[in-house]
Every structure is written in structure tokens, then in C-alpha cells.
Length: 204
Image (cartoon, rainbow, N blue to C red):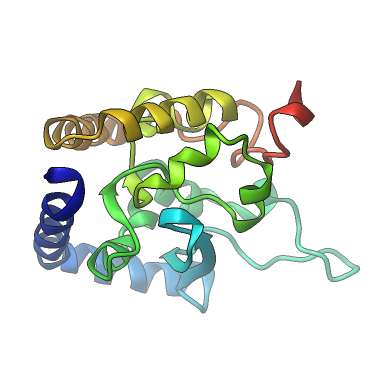
């Protein structure tokens, strides 16, 4: 059945091939990131995987470490410069996540891995997004990405869980390429990144 072994085999084979093919791009992005934003080149953070099990997600960093007079990090929109915005809009910052796919923590396609603190804020229905491995791209990403509300995104994530198939994954991957080239839905209106999710009840 594709949802079990088939999806994992597809992920491993495709991620291995993509890492080989994109290795020159990965190397160049790493070098420019080191030059423009400094060290470390990678942003690492604990995220919930399948069944909420934590893993370390790695992406190319897109923000500086600029701080105010009190030593507090400046707001995201002030630390996200032109280069960081370019990495995000082209999804080049996501390239290191192919390594997460190889290790089995992620899939090429699935609900995006969010923050650990969100786990306790989901409704039981929203929490079903963790019934599958999180993905580099997903059904929500090709249907609006960060331009969607949290509730819309979670509804699309659960729909994907219920309709997961090889054909759907291929469709999502194809749409991801189109959306990335068009740079659609990169951020929420008026925000550099997606706003905090405090729970459905807290936002109604």
C-alpha cells in the first residue's frame, strides 16, 4: 500500500536523486548564505513529526541576528532582508530538508511541520495532520500557502491525510513547481512570516 512502504520508498529514491542533481545549487546557496548572513548557515529547530514525535528540521537561514539596544532580536520583518526574502520566495531555503526526507523524519509531500508548542493548541480534528509524516510541500502549500488562515490550512492538511495517494502526491509536486516559479502565497498579508497560531478558539 502506497501510504505505508510505497511512499517511503518513493521519498527516499526521489530525495536521493534530487540531492545529487541539486548539489551544485545547494553548495552555492550555502556559500552565499555564509557570506550574506554569517554563521551558522543552517537554521535548526525541533519540530513535531509523525504522531507528534520531535525531530530536528534544518533549513538555510534567512534572517540576521540583529538585536535592539536591550539585546532582544528585532522583529522578523526587520531581520529578513532582500536575500532572505529571495530564498523564501524561491523555496531555496527548504533544500536542506531533503536530508530530513532521507532520514525518514519527513516526506516530500505532507502537512508542513510547524512548532512544538502548537501541539497542545490543535483541536482533535486538526491534530490528525500528524497521522502522516510532515512534508517539504503539501496540499495547503499548493492551495494558498501562507496566504491562507490557520483553519483553512489545517482543513487542507486533514483532507490530504484522508485522500493520500501516489497520484495526489505527484499532482502536489507538479503544482509546487508551478507555484514556486510564480512565487505565490509566500507570506500572509502584512506579515513577513505567518502569524502565531494560538488555537482556533483563541482566534474566533
